[in-house]
Image (tube, rainbow, N blue to C red; front, side):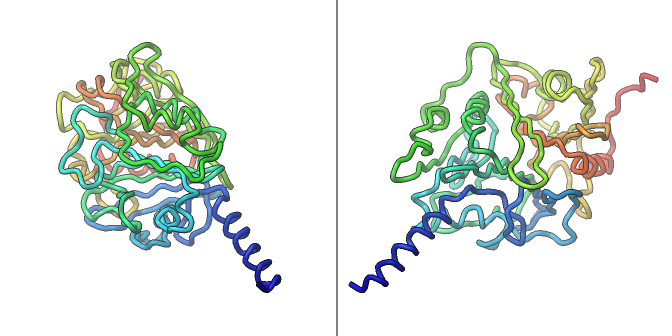
Length: 358
């Protein structure tokens, strides 16, 4: 064989290997690597209002189409559905309402998300979308048009994955799909105990402590300090008032959660840091889009007061009495402008305010 041709083939193979084992990150609509992204899915559309990591993040002027295979979401998944690159991928998908299921898995953690990486930094999607994503198909498919919801993408450091898995295990998630890279490597899911444990039989936390948290800074420009909290069912607490506001964040919060099912928890006004509910049955305005509580699958919180340490949190926990016994979690990004944007959203509705101390 022509030696020059052999050299070219080896060089091409080397280049493909280098490209597809590079660290992974979240994407924006222009397919550029970014540190984090927030997608608020628009009701009855396969589109979202989006905020991307930037020195001064803001709502994108146009709705982001979620359907393209080379779009902000599709770019994350398409290499996994490509035969040449799939073997290099490590992926864990979890949800209590997986694709192809007729109903949610009863008495299970409501946590929903996907972790993807090759042999370094990766991306983590935290979301509230039911029956998505389907990892058993042959191509990326966007969330079906229907309810509103949140999809938050975080570029997560590889060095944080072990602790991430430990915290997630407190939520006892329903892992419905996983893929460990082949040939096996030291960075493969199968060879990292904490990640591999998530793919095994459920093992709920039954001894204290019943709540665990961690922090990491998202990878890339305009990275955000991120706090991840996991709560076991045996904690029997409201994660917002008893842990987030008064133990971890040390901030008062405003919470948007679905309190229509069961006895709701009133706004928490007795501690140093308060937790105020957006009143049940309200409609919020997400940028320019009206979102009714009855059509939104997401739960989120935002610092009541602006400041350098202000946060936006996405959560799978609901502020009702029954949910004290349900495992749950929250992911909070410390980003002042992001807090300002979501505080404005919360204040488009009526808030169950605590009495003024002054």
